[in-house]
Image 1 (cartoon, one colour):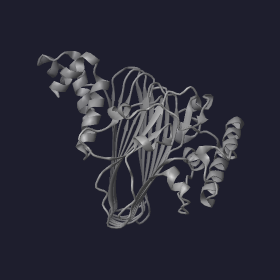
Image 2 (image 1 turned 45 degrees about the vertical axis):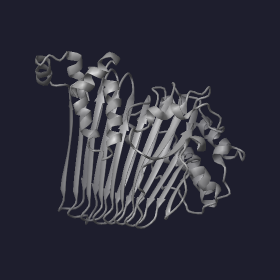
Image 3 (image 1 turned 180 degrees about the horizontal axis):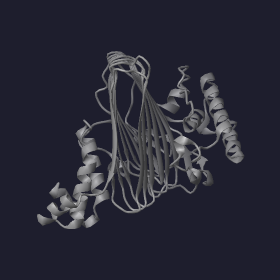
Image 4 (image 1 turned 60 degrees about the vertical axis):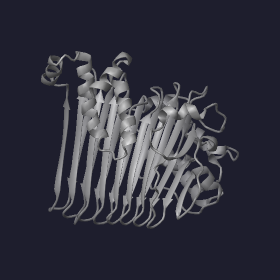
Length: 443
């Protein structure tokens, strides 16, 4: 552990490291110092920690990663077409190995009270607005505070509507030295503001990268945000994400999380419903194959009366993969007349696949409507027999039933081109290459 701390401290002291520039900003300097101090104190989590009981990040400790310090790459615009959404016009910001690439991004201008910029440029302008997040016990969030270097800033002023969705594409390439990146995404919506934002995490080749991203969302009174995150990095990558959401009166935030890639993928979401009338919806889908490990930990605090939250997650595990779901809702004292719904359903396609699910409710108010449930099962023999009796092969029948199970989550997304993109991805993962066209026809 000392070697890791020493490495991080060494990076912090390197003035010419491009990823750690702008240390002249007092708030940024303090964030870096506090982040590294917290990590030095607690270190990487282990299975002895209750919240990491089923997820062992020891393989990350054994790997040699370096912080990205060069913008050199050979990625072309056409290489990214496969990650774009057909028939959806977006404002696109592209990051290669953690660093912003203006040549592959849309032209961005700040107008009508809407600030949209990449973080490194925003920091270079000397902004004094503190983007530090109170990481609490989230050690990887602390590391992001320490090493945030690039990412996106989206600030929408009162009464403004961002008409086009923002699409952030974080691309990892198969570099000789495995890289670690710390994207920071800061989203702030003013009163009555509206926006849609999509995060995509993708790989070109078998990239062996570590992504540690933090998305911070602050939604003011009566604002609305639809947020998507699609993680499809290589099976050799590691992906760690924190999502912090703070909601004010009558705001509505919907966040969709789809996890398809990485050797180890972990998403921690923390939501504070701070004022009355707020609504938060967390939808999620995770697919595991081979020996992939996917973990979602959700924590929602109902801090005021007349608030509503919903967690709807599904997992599909094949081969020797493992999934983890922990959803916790805390209803604080005097947070009366709230509604909280949790659901986690899991499908095991192999006798060697495993899922650990734990929905939790912690209630300190007496006039509430709360429900939670979890299921783990296999494909129905009855439904398989029905499809087989209609002349559908067993392989197609299994793929069709699995697709229907997953598509239930996808259909909860309002952006149709994103739904269609994910459906194509699902069909590709659930079918052999010579079955894909036939399965599309059946669907």
